[in-house]
Length: 307
Image 1: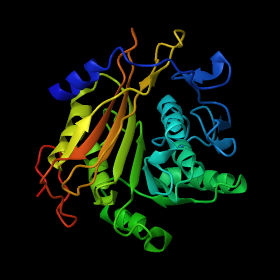
Image 2 (image 1 turned 45 degrees about the vertical axis):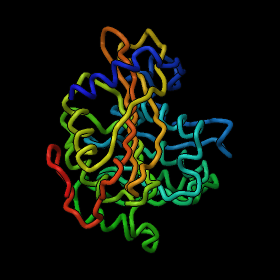
Image 3 (image 1 turned 180 degrees about the vertical axis):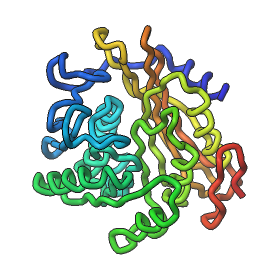
Image 4 (image 1 turned 120 degrees about the vertical axis):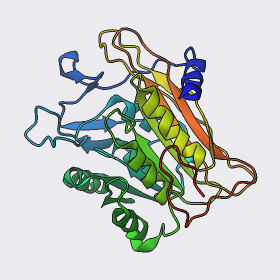
């Protein structure tokens, strides 16, 4: 936890202002428009404008307990991928806790070989509608699979989807704003460990809004470290809208594999504060030299070393 605190403090002055969200101010919640029926993303790197459906809290289609609407970190994260398409191009990508699927949609449009959007049961109908919408716009390399974190049968479903194309795990796992107090991040890590490829080039890239929850962040990073991954942090951006007290920052990271032939992971962090804008940070994880991650090993819980 203390190491996570130090890493995030180290990047406090490096965040870059970025405009987030859309719609008029009266419609903005958490610094983005959560009431518009559709969210659109445009970027020079994208072959077309992306449009995905959302259902905010005032909409009859809102599903309690799921992210059926946009959260600002997803916009930052999607733009990061647009700025660095090499992170996903030609690779098999899985998004955990995909919500409306904006981040995974960006990965698919940027040339990922295949993108699998996953979330809990209640989120699947919306994800399926967005998959169909993307296909109509020419982004056809997207699939949807139900994955409840830590559920071995759901892990098997994700690994065997697409005819078992990712039988040995996914090249890239994306996670947007799932590090939140009250979320079962131990089970989230179990899914990361089960679904990430064991190849040296594999990456876990995670973006989140930091909400002064040092223990939640620290324990997730600790689990990754105990599995043999070295974590580092770097910023993505910081929202510069002073009218919204829930301003968010986001961050990114470079990832490289170590000599031991282990999977790499990265996570991006962002910050928020009701009184001031906190630093943004990201974490990258890299396998230490000489360590070996056994694909058949039991998934580690936080605070317990993986075999």
